[in-house]
Image (cartoon, rainbow, N blue to C red; front, top):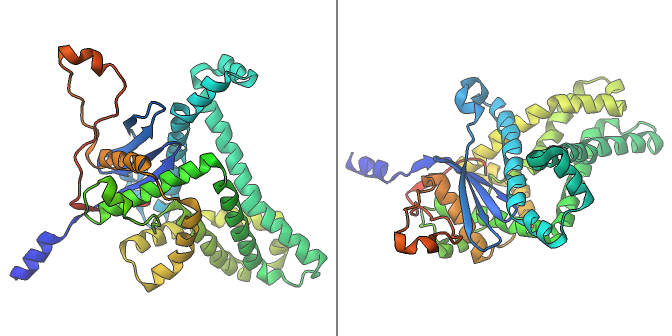
Length: 360
């Protein structure tokens, strides 16, 4: 009995932690909420708590298995994109404006939309991104298969449509990631992505959140969004294959009819993918490791080894997500002038007695 009690005492509390790389920063989610840490142009680290309450916490209906994956994906996409746009506005975009001045387009947008200019740019960018994703990962593979099936095989390979399209999507996805990783700005984001993973691994290991401890961690995490996307492609092949077996041929022969079916089953694919990613993070075994392997391989492209200054940003974001941002003490009168100069936000004390569990 005494041994069981001791073992229970040694068990660490399970805490939900996840994150996302930004432009010159990292957003982390934890028990205290969502925190965004940015490396500002003056070299300081700005840490800010962001208001975000998931609808899954408000209504239990949206937290049931499968459905919660769809809700989580949509919420993460919207909230994460807003954080990304804000980080760009506070860091890199400010530099570009200072160096190059306002273009005619900038002036037109500023005159017509004023303070809402960044919101308008964000909405337009999101619409274009979604349109490009649909074109590359859904329409292009389906149209390519239709052409090959009709022109080269006279409709004889219809039954392997889902496998063919899945392989094309994987090739496009990997190629796209490799190409964008060569861009200087994106490579910086990938370095922050690596720091995000390393910081969470350090926390999960129960170590103090220091640069030295974080640096030692690996940068490939099984609950990464990259793994989720890659796994979703594999799951889509399996689920689409089942539908292809029962649907009549006149649907499979038509690019647009087949695309409608794929759009209808997309929520199911996201839900299944989310549940598996959570399972892989909580209960690693031979099966989950095998299915997670392709996503982990992809992280060799979408993450990069961070420098110490980038690791500091990851630590600051994670500490704030765990403990919140402490209020700054008022500076004494004789040092009031010094207090007015820009300084980095004070970091809360390190936390090393908890482990994390959430999509990062």
